[in-house]
Image 1 (cartoon, one colour):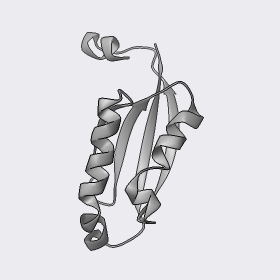
Image 2: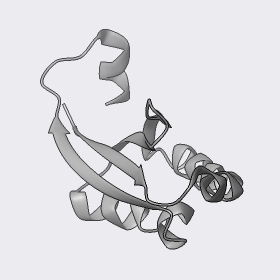
Image 3: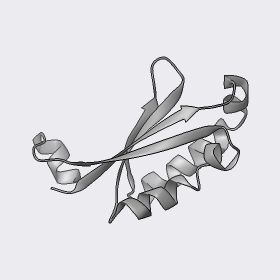
Length: 97
């Protein structure tokens, strides 16, 4: 199976500033879904950041994608990437990986 990259976003600014940049962030998310990089994404609970599951050739590629996140570019969030090598998955997920 492929390596999956679990990216944890942590907001460093108030939610009002996050919400003001949300449409640009969603546009960036959609582009990366269309490009086949992102597998899943969503808000953390409590709402202090987000999580993105991605696939790519290497950590450097995923990091380059994350550097283009409007939240990162505007200084609204930090991100940490954890490579994860899936050794087992349900059938539906196996075909995506």
